Image (cartoon, rainbow, N blue to C red):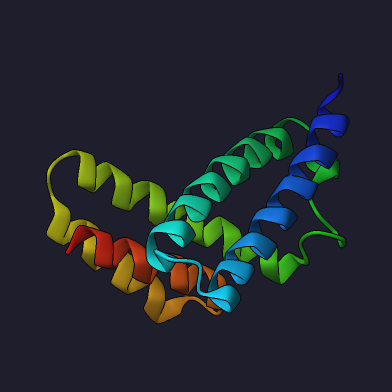
Length: 125
């Protein structure tokens, strides 16, 4: 096993998770919000491992296939905001966590990530 093989597997996994979230919305699989939230949390974890791989081997950073540079930037931004929001939530500061997600929605160009953030806001309300 190499970092490159792990990287390839995670690219496939993140792509499949994105598709799964879209399918949940399209099929209205109930509870839609909770299901998207679960998929979003899994995606966050995958993205975090990918980030660690890119730190060690920057040449593996996405150029095409699963993530364009724009998508990679959107995922990176989402990861940053979500990690901060989760830390706030764990500290018992749910209002601040909701505000963090709201701020993300205001600046993100990614529909999928905005929907996940909205689901998190609903969960925290």
